[in-house]
Length: 260
Image (cartoon, rainbow, N blue to C red):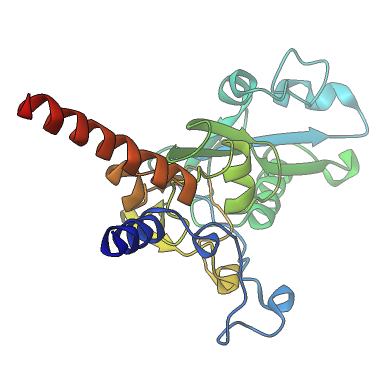
């Protein structure tokens, strides 16, 4: 009897999910001292399939009407996925965007600020004069992120902000489920040479230093299930114990029926 009790307790401890596997950004002996000052947040460089929202203003509004991205009455398009798709300036496979009158402008590999300066120069060279006093803003048309796996609401979301980290994306997807592996979250990222897979441990505060903590457009996040999910023994000790007793009850019933 004692052996059976010990076996049940050991099985419960192994099958339930510990707090250490569920808490984000935990400090350890090897943790960084001051993570706030060392966050890896490099400026994003534009790639093919990005969509830009470009807004051009001038002293005379009639001069910029042709560049408006919607009905011409305003330089601000509707902030929705449909508005982004139809009103934005997509970066093609050659790294170009097409702007009225100016034509193709190559922006591949540029930061948003560098792209703004280049577009402004092209406009001044080919259409405007210095007296027009143009004001150009260039933004990414939202961060399109896909989250899949052990999360509350898998799917694709567009975050309308300058930058976002992986925790924000997971929060928008309903957070990682109890049975999700927070220690080996996969980030699939697009590069000029193709897609690459990376992993990040979100239970470790050192994740703040990871180049994958801050997201880039078209990142794909996948949260793998913990082994406990496939075992089917429950997420907590009580659930595991309940599952074990259910199985034992079933086995006992089958044994009694077989004897009769």
